[in-house]
Image (cartoon, rainbow, N blue to C red; front, side, top):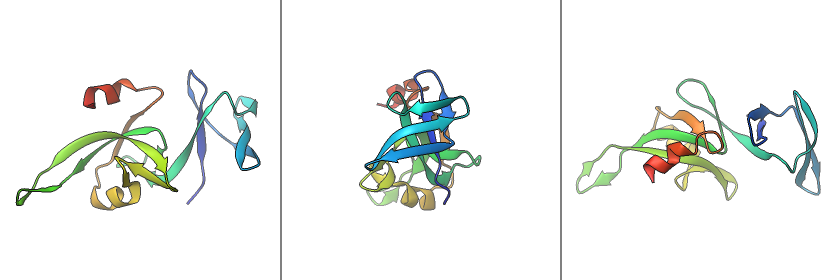
Length: 125
């Protein structure tokens, strides 16, 4: 897996070329138009997965996907819209490992991210 990061500067998403670390914390970043302190940015890591359209899935992305829980003797299809989070050393959707969901659903779609499209989550709450 390629390790990639991106940064939200409050106005737009930027790819990160280089990251500087101090004492295990991100200290500075280098983007195509910025080099300096990382504290003014929200940093998101690539999960190692892509969606059905080959779009990289990052922490903070809003994903549309379908699950089929077993309910009352039948499998019931349910469409969900959730945010990718990095928790306990793994990327998760709805508290479930993104790797597990990825294996079970081949229709994952990145529909936005929490910074540019937070309104997508408000509809599903």
